[in-house]
Amino acid sequence: MLIVVSPAKTLDYTTPPKTKKFTLPDYLDDSAELIHRMREF
Image (cartoon, rainbow, N blue to C red):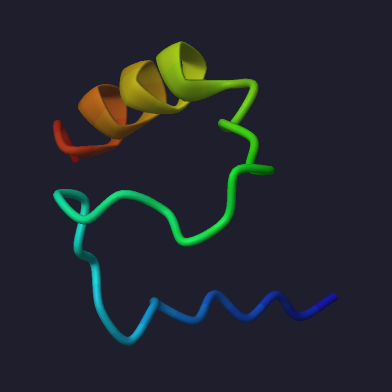
């Protein structure tokens, strides 16, 4: 199985979204913990 992760062209978190309909990721806390653990390697 191949998985491709492509980064966004810009990561501008200060500009508000252009649409009023948007969602937030469900697993932000879990991903932060995973990132923390993976940085130890």
